[in-house]
Image (cartoon, rainbow, N blue to C red; front, side):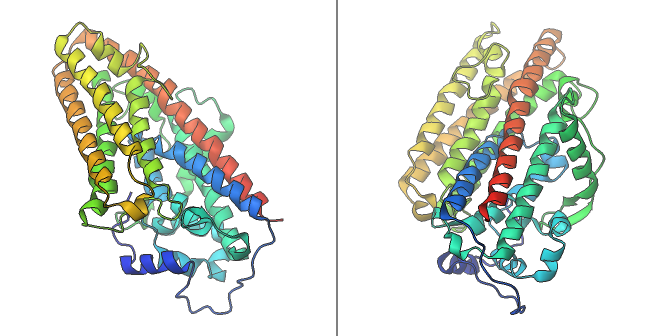
Length: 398
């Protein structure tokens, strides 16, 4: 998510080149550095990349809890509000109540990119000798909040509510965090806890009236992230509309982010995490084997265009933060556009089966599999690795 009311981009560029600076008037802030090893921060950065990959591989299903509970903006707003964050990192008052502060702080200083801003410089782990005690206190709190947010995603899609401890964390998260508006600010309380896994599996009990409607949401979720990657994440910098609209610029992780976003689509459509071929309860498998020539042809086209898009992203010149105008970026944009078109055609054909009892029954199978073998395991691994990241940050300081 891009925060619509962040700092001027010239300031971002200056901060990128100069490192952490502050406009704060609090010149008495404690800027002493932590006692730790470079190996420690390198481990943290490695764990950040692992947790980051899990998040990006969930972006084909940002509907449901990620949207309703404002977890997407709370954990993944970018570009970073660097001036604001630099001030907070010298603000003794904010640090005194940091766990509560970050629950309502502007989302432009939080989540993956707030951590990235402190941990990385020019694609490399920052020197441990530069990390202040206040920065350390901040990233500990943000990482813990990130774990609670990702745990909430897991609990909200666990149709069996099988992990009581994580379910309790989710209930507390929903009760203590606020909705986030377009400017990234907290705005009003979240609604009560909902189980989106149950609702997706059982049409008519939640946001999806029919099984087909829920299945079509799988396609829509894929199209949303495909459009964002092609038109915004790559397209805005490439065209010059916004050359500073670059995700993960401090870690030089942009192209990996893009690739993982499309992997999330592959997992969703193939019905399995890390799938190489569609499983027999997936959307693509159904369309290929439903005895309908049009559906089969459209599904096969999606498979071809999906592989092509992944290949073009992988071939982009890295790092994107330095080479965002390279022709390889345009090749990826075009491939993503073709994939979006292919999914749009498949979506239109499936819509024609509204009310068909046979298709409705098959969609129920697809949806059950999608929750149990795509969404839930992705979020579970995400929460596990967010916890690992938090623990490595805690251990970074001697």
